[in-house]
Amino acid sequence: MAANSSPFKIILGSSSVARRKILAEMGYDFAIMTADIDEKSIRKEIPEELVVALAEAKAAAILPRIPTGDYINAVEPTLLITADQVVVYEGVIREKPSSKEEARKFMKDYSGGQAATVSSVFVSNLKTGFRKGDWDRVEIHFHEIPDDVIEKLIDEGTVLYVAGGLIIEHPLILPLVKKVVGTTDSVMGLPKALTERLLKEAL
Image 1: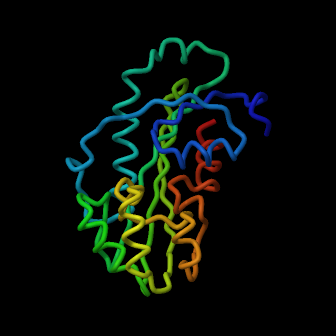
Image 2 (image 1 turned 45 degrees about the vertical axis):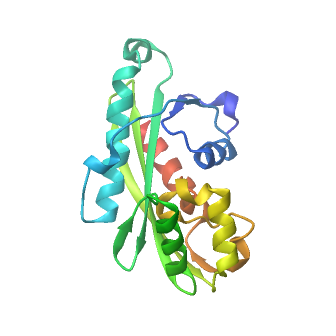
């Protein structure tokens, strides 16, 4: 569907460059709003429940800032998309590294091993009040990651701002990824198939 012929508007509730890129690749025009929530205040043992709860909390933080009157009366509905992601390593949930030391430890763990990303998408229809979220899980298997690659990534800094310090699309890491069971867009934070399904359900 071409962006200009969408019978609905989209607000992406995320500051993530990767999510913006993926949503644009899907052919959508969208506005951006961000939710500043205290993610640490939301705790759940099960990663799938945690990421859906976080995406829902982001929606709850953004919705009051949107002048809903305009949207309820508009002809076409406006859909708010929020998302979240954690990395799971040996059953333990990992969020963004708190320091360079932690990022280094995370990457050494992945070397020659595997990790999973659990990503959520939550869609809210501002016109009808429909709200629904779901999750997607991907497993990533790595070859050995040399120490000099880890140090280069830490110096550059991107790994400090992503869940579990895990990136697979980076030119230094890409050749070291042995196998991905699932889709790359999901690892990058916005599973396309799940997003499309929830957008359809929301309409």
